Amino acid sequence: MNIRNTTAKEKMLKKIRQALLQKRENPHPAFEDSPLYKDEEESLDVTFAREFTNGAGKFVYCDGEINLIENLIILLEKINLTKLYVWDKNIQQLLDQYGFPYHKNRRDFEDMEVGITGCEALIARNGSILVSNADASGRRMSVYPPVHIVIAKASQLVMDIRHGMALVREKYGQDLPSMVSVITGPSRTADIEKMLVLGAHGPKELYLFLLEDRF
Image (cartoon, rainbow, N blue to C red; front, side):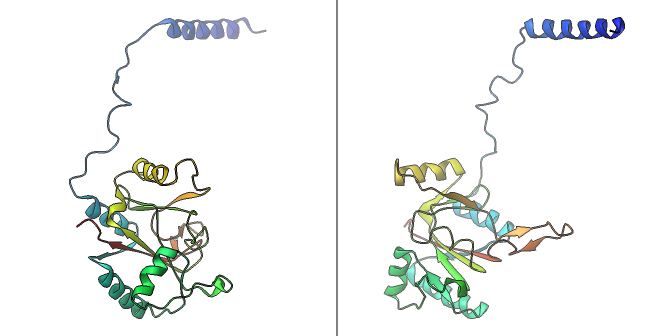
């Protein structure tokens, strides 16, 4: 055994033991209680719209149900797609009130061009949409169609994901959904030659229709 190496090792271990025995004051005692983000000056809806569009999402504000239907008609005419599917019962009831056509069968969902779903919450901080598999839309509707439209209410806006999860726990109690996920913009990847590609693993276009229900 090399005596020189042993001596160097003993010196190093001695320094470590001495350092562990020394008690030092925490230079940042309030670190865990300090806010991670600065306070937002804008309202929740403005903050969400800004961050959502920054992530390549397309935001549509609707001041009522009639305005929502009008915006849906305008969008579908613009993108020239007709095979629109809705499995969520609440959204089906909303569309039925105004005679808005849609598909609701599940047998030929492979033909789906547009899928409309609801969501659990809208995370304003980073423009994300919190979804789960608890409603009839399940897991497929938010990932399969090339165009995904989410209809959400303004009352579902929260600042951070922890507030969104609080809404989920409040809604479902102990019977939490088996899948809770966050959508931030359309599907994207840069696996091939570091080139950003939208729609590689999911919807290429993501729309958020915000239905005003606060007034």
